[in-house]
Length: 302
Length: 251
Image 1 (tube, rainbow over the protein chains, first blue to last red):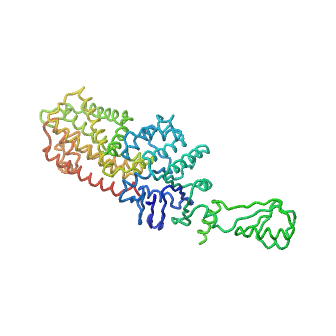
Image 2: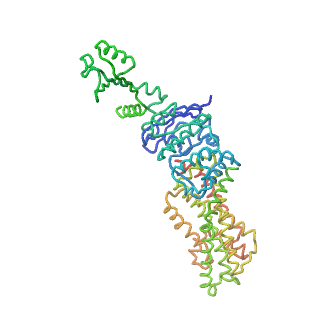
Image 3: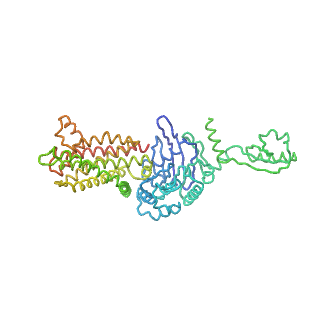
């Protein structure tokens, strides 16, 4: 099977500044993949290299098996990119922009498909409006539409929901999810980690031009040592045997930090022998945000 | 082919949608040059034996409009797309650098020729300057506008801000145009300036173009055409190389 995106030892330097360092990454067809990382981590640079907007200093990248430099024409036909900046051509209406964009990809008479994307992105009534007259959210939708005119199997969205209101954000995610279900490979960057957690199968975390974590979200979360159990107990003061545990108390809740599920059993056994009743119990799993902060922090320290 | 055609069409549509500014305004300003210069100089100067100054001036003005607008079209389209960021739509597409080059050049040639035709049509209401050799007129109009639209691509790609483009235009294109013999024959100049004028490729465009109208010129039109075509070919080669390398547009 040909990978949707294959990146091999890719580096990009601007003078002495290293924007990307030796990136290796393979994304399979049909994946819903997130690139995460703080501003300046190299996410946009990586996307730009895949899109042919930036030339890598060394290494290579392929889209559906086509090298982004040597076979740029085929590679770009397989790829749709939604840029981060809200760019538009003020000379044209929404429909004109889409017809023109289709033409760049060698597609004529694309009206049926254009109608469909306009409809699915809720832009149908804006088809003949000049781009200048659209709100920011509408312009964002047109950018998505422009990336889809040629029905690319691989779609990259660079912060598609930055500065977008809640309603549109949800509509966009729904639409992107449908695209993924239709078989498109989706790669996105976002700063909303809960969105990435809800949608993506796998994530890569970038920091200072390097991939510092690459795994499924479940594995990343599981690998982070330690989650916590909260108890409300029948006793006010904890027995001495529990004093040694790493814990904190808050509003009558005792929060124990634990490394694995087995420790819950140990805890419960102690409570049973001490004849303390459990009034309330809650297990708190770390979320992606916690994982993100931890991983980024670990890189900082090293 | 569809890709090239689409970009060509888009570039035509771009200037056509603002034709008041891109076609009518330059026609008006050429007309003003004509009225003022012919009023002041008609009775005082005769450049070629038996030819009125206005008849001498009109072909020059037409060619000047063609050149200025061919340059303005590709350069302003590129700089606007770069600054507003929408050049990305072209850069993301599978269009080859050759297709991009040809589309920008041809759209600019069309605008240059449209403005030139417009200037000629309007001046014909007031004066009469018949075309003696239409083929020479067409050849020089094409070659000249191609050279200028190609220079426009270089200027548009090199400039990062509007003032840099304005500098390119004001310090290179405008002096070369005004000193190309639009308003005078270079043989009326002191000999040092005559020699310098021979280094100006725009001089050959104007001189050859004028030959098509008047049947007389400073230099043989064959020689002029070969100079203009050589320059256009050289600049095109440079532009293609710049586009291929991704200079300033694919970092």
